[in-house]
Length: 248
Image (cartoon, rainbow, N blue to C red):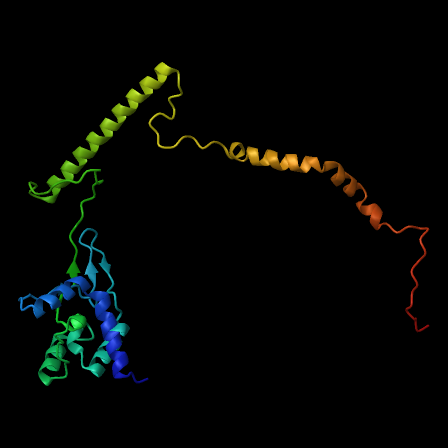
């Protein structure tokens, strides 16, 4: 199935919109028009996998090999091979050869064509930074005076312990005041009280239903007792005529 040049261009434009920092590229295009030199913006390569440095697991690339191959075909049709990042289906040599052969479309200088501007793609799989396994405190921690991540984690644990100790001390004071007033101390300092048993929560609704049913109870009993009487055939009634003609 052949793809038109317009459809291939739309597919490349959609790819760039989904994988590039839009605001930064738009600002770069505006600064270029005002003759301000800007360096190439770095972008994450969606054709390569990503490794989580904390647990060592590899995440699959955003685009599978089949999708990468389709994008490369469309880029060759519309002459925009330079806009794609290198990957298993498109090497750096192929991109450089496309530049030398002149098949790559020139970059537009208009602000609305910011998606045509070149960017610096990652050529190696990305490895994320490790995250310490520490409960985050309620207030942020400044890492300006911290030499490494271990010291920051130690400070976070100490601050979290202090906050929990302060909450326990505050709850003890509230319980002491409640005892002096003769109140129940079970729910002191808690965000939500005991919700009660299920039968306690639905008791009011159940009693209302029973009240409505008891209002019409004599009528219900009378209808129950006469249910089969109305359907029992009377021996004094005239039998219905049987118009069916038998063959014998």
